[in-house]
Length: 184
Image 1: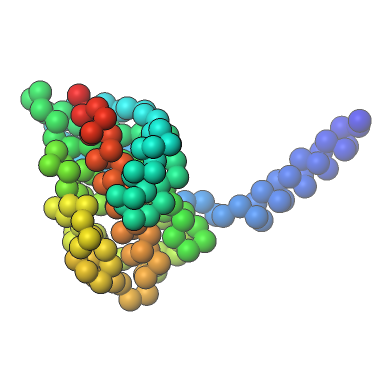
Image 2: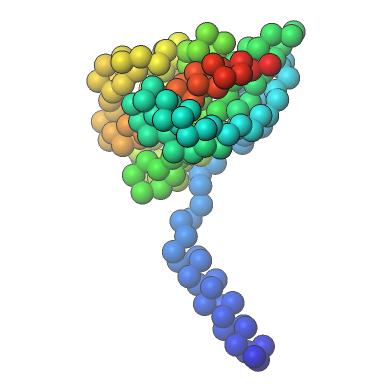
């Protein structure tokens, strides 16, 4: 095959990639920045774990939302020999594009914080920072849902739905993992 063919093929691939692929995530904070902000003066350890089919099913039942990924990465933070929290990054679709959230779980199993790490949708669909604070301190229970303990957001309904579902998934997975093997 001629080099002309490969040049044309490369050009076609580039055109398809740049016209079909989204413009790219709007990264609001890096993973490192998010973890440093969530756990100041702490030692953070990355752990990769795999949920069994039974654990996936139990997490789905607890969350009330589908937990589909067996691969879970968590970041366990220690300060002065004690666990101060565990962080998870949840990547999910909002409307047609993805969002990545940092969800911190406190040692008592409640939400420590929810923070947007990246958001591919138009920024108009992103609730204000204060909206996310209503998750702080919430346990995984029936009230952790929209129009219960969590207020809806006009103009960002799909983001609110996605954020609530992600938070419920994270808390459910965390509970399952803590039953299996408490964070060292």
